Length: 70
Image (tube, rainbow, N blue to C red; front, side, top):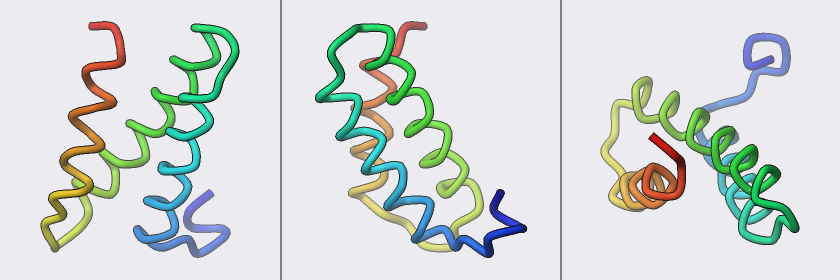
């Protein structure tokens, strides 16, 4: 998806934020975890590829990690 659409890390970070918000508003626990898992995956990808440190991104990753089952 990224290579076809030319999405940047900033785009992925915005999508992850939307996914996180969707998860917070989800009606079922299963949907909530699904959104959180996708948001975590995207933010983790950005974190691994980014050359700059973001405290906001770190806080979101920690929050998502705590919301997901082990």
